[in-house]
Length: 446
Picture 1 (cartoon, helix red, strand yellow):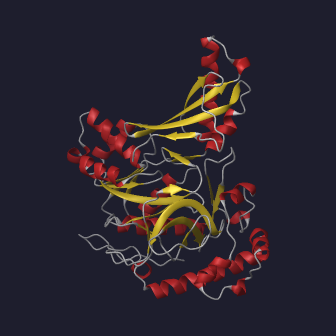
Picture 2: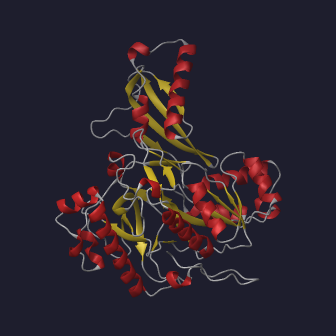
Picture 3: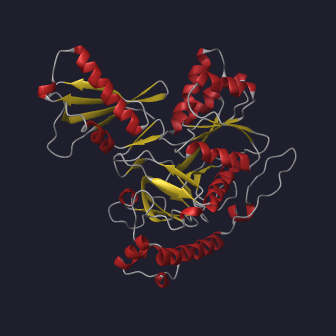
């Protein structure tokens, strides 16, 4: 169990949620990481057929781990493993020990299911409690959660952490933007968890109804993530809305949103006692040099229900290991700069072209060629799918074409959990490629 927080000091903000852990010397942090890695590997070798088989195939046993760097002897796991062992074959606790499930949106029509024990939920909220505290938030704050509540992990993740630090929570979830703005004003909301694009949209709607977020509200911190965003967008949010943009990171496979920048905004703090972070060359799988860009590989050191060892999450970033100006000693990562696969993030939702293809191919009237066009209109992402009709389905009957288009849009919306516009085009009108097809045209500017 993770240790308790320091008492809040009346009239001041807590500097740390868990000072003993957050500022521990790096040598002690590495010793703790190795101890937890050994315990994790021993447990999975004994109780998980999946991990035991993988370790035996890699000719490694728990006793082969003599130091932290020996983590590189362990085999990788990938998103494909999560899909192949759907829904719960990678769980390593009894079913009665699971107290919650969350799910991703899925990559080929089948989501990834993540189970949580009571301790997993505690670790998750502890991680984000440290993050919110490091961003300058505490029990005097009112935090509005504008992330989706439900199977998506964003809403409940921030909710539990905000309550843990003693802040008041406004569980607004997504949508109904004018109502969100009214709540921000009426309840004196000081922080908002959202996607950065939605934060911008809130600003646009506020201006339309005559409200200045900067001058007419107490909102001062945005806990922003779940989609790529740039320093330019951060500058605009801070200058225009008067809201300090704190970059947050997480994924449903890990638990949900778990890590964030501190108030110094110099990279996202990764709590090393919870997660062992590697940055590898995606082609050679060897560690990159200091301050070099590479693929993020994660080992969740304390997860009980759904452990992850050397999980290739697919994000590209840089690790920084020097002590932060805030005094925290844990490693930090730079802003995510890309993916090793072709995943898109649309309004905070992961979307794979393979998902789109899967859905389109269930319609017998549609051909094989399609193209995804992504734009940012105002503050929000817009996705258009152009798809060719089969020659025998091509018609000038507008009523039939509109009915087909609406049916295809509904299928995509149900699968992806995000609205998609569809344009039916003539057979042979989309580009052809001799090599790998270029299915995505991303015209967003960050």
